[in-house]
Image 1 (cartoon, rainbow, N blue to C red):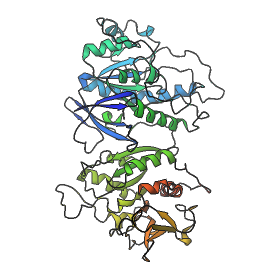
Image 2: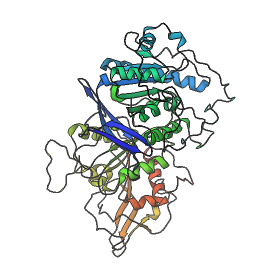
Image 3: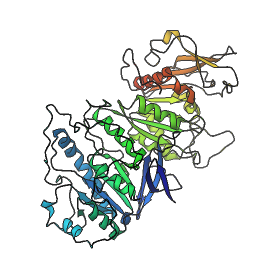
Image 4: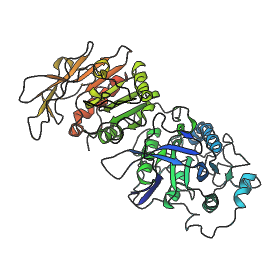
Length: 533
């Protein structure tokens, strides 16, 4: 099925598979390139979404953008050198599958004038149907707002500032050029002719810099999005020119994340290199100190596929690289992306009654057995059990996940409360007010939108940090608990997580502190997180 998705003035055009992939984030066999692409729809209720692409390698090209041998900015030169071997490996994997490789080191054609890869491009027959504007830098697409990072100073973070000049002479030699198969060009018209001659419908881009050349070159992302090609950015094989002293005053690597998010919302989807390389995780720069956080959402009742990404991007992006595994209502026995637990440093879990294929459940069990941190919300207390009366053949359950891992025993709930009934009241247990997870939360009874879950009794070794009750009843229930598993993994579970709870600053603060505590990161005094917009 071929789908066109309107994105505020620009078009995403890509093939979607009707069946979500199981196991690896992407796999390929025979002559099919299967990729899990991430994008950010215009629909405010879906901040991040995925599609399964199935491309024919013969109809696919990979463009290597401006991976020069030297940049005028010393920091950029260092990052390009670190990135280049991984781009080379990606090119080799794509080439082996039959993907056309185009090396595009702008302003550096002279050293390649007599090379077979360059001559192969210049000898293409002229095409009278070259679209207007193929030779021009392309600015923002219709409806595309200003970029989220300010590179008006050139983006160089070095002190003293590096002198701007044309430092490059050729593509960095770490990236090999197959003179028998590849093409070399820095001209949009030439690349268009190549694509027309080969029937290229699908385009992948790698290289630098995402906020400049990768977007704007005549062969860049905006151009192919404008022309209706199926285009994706390989988001872990790119970089930005961004100086953290400029707005929004985040780290260089968080700035790149924000720019990628911008591309996913206004220009085109993105993929990761491990989907071709099969090496288990995306590339990351050694200087990026952040840990990997995986958001796992697979429930149809509380909108956590919206609220958790919004929370994580607002409150955790400076300290964590954020990844997503989002289950779909139509496929209750599959959570695409769950395999990212294999490299995640911490997970946030909001899953409801999802027995899984043995391979996916094995990834979950291995993560817990490794003693890795977990912060679980609301329906995670019955995450992997079947619905009443259902029996799923060939799937694995984990019915006692609540007592074994979270430290509670789920026994249903008291029914929906507000606006049609009495409120749910919660409070920090006085003796726990200094615990890092709940430090700074207002004292006294707090009203929440979540109807109260029955979570008693708690498992041995579990601490109750917050309790709650329905306003017109005296029975108390644990609401937020913390524990350390037998594998030494720290776990926080809260039965809160209604969309209305995410509108409470103290709830967002508690979640952020829960992630820090679970990761054994110090929770700073007077900790604050971004307030709810």
